[in-house]
Length: 112
Image (cartoon, rainbow, N blue to C red):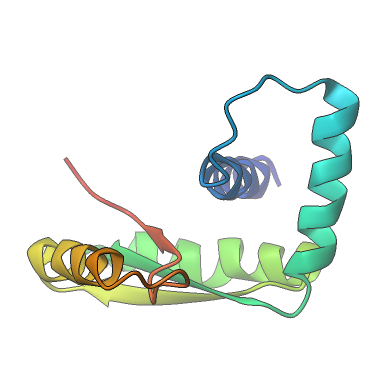
């Protein structure tokens, strides 16, 4: 259970880091935002682009993390294997330059 909490916390921090807010917020404000994040996450799909060269890590993400996100938040986690990180990063750059607000990559795992 501790591993799933760590994974969920990492996911939450990633999502919240993308909000880009510059002012510090109180605990009450953050808790209120988190409640909204949880409500908006229900029945959503998150595409997680990641290195997939380790079968054990793949099983962990596909089963333990994905099942926990589905059970707790209703989020469907879709692991998208990265063959070459350059292709994935280029995809992000192209989408950003095109002014795309909702990119095709929700999260990315970069080794190294």
